[in-house]
Image (tube, rainbow, N blue to C red; front, side, top):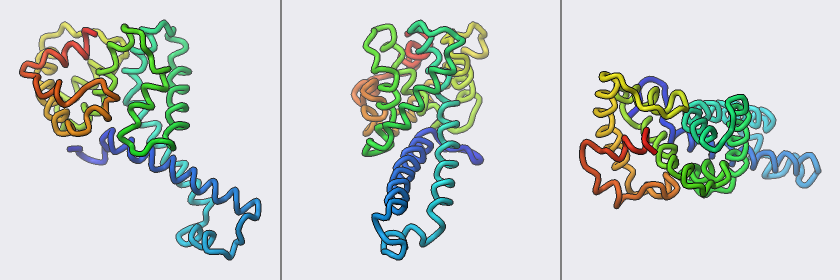
Length: 229
């Protein structure tokens, strides 16, 4: 579904969670080794050293984690900025708020049983907002990953730039852009249906398989979630 070296957002989530968990394990082992809790010649230490030095492995994991975190932050930035602005955060504080959210997500990633639960942690990192005006943006936030599942095309590009690029949520007036968006919604819907089995988990309950199964072209629901919520 992805061209070139670009990873889908769900694959990035999987990489992110995997790195967090592996990094936590190796840090615990290194701490025990430094405290003399097991011998350097012991079985566990031998396993740690089997492929490369544990400290180098730790550095490698940190680099992979940082790369995944940067990519995820970039992709979700527009949607999160829209949430922040709606909740009253001023533009000069958007960067700090974004950093705080992803630090919270990273802290909680080690507790999830699967990367599929990471969207829940992303939402909870923003205080699990219950304000209706904020909740109205939850489907849009959750759909961000599905947009990246669309094969490379102008329609996908339009969704990324217009719906998620600025963090303002303004519906375009340009007829060409509107046409691209209308053609993008069926493509987005196909990707949503592909993951209908896990949809409730992947969207933290914002969408369900029963709801999307009843949606029909021209899919006004996506228009509403993207620009009218």
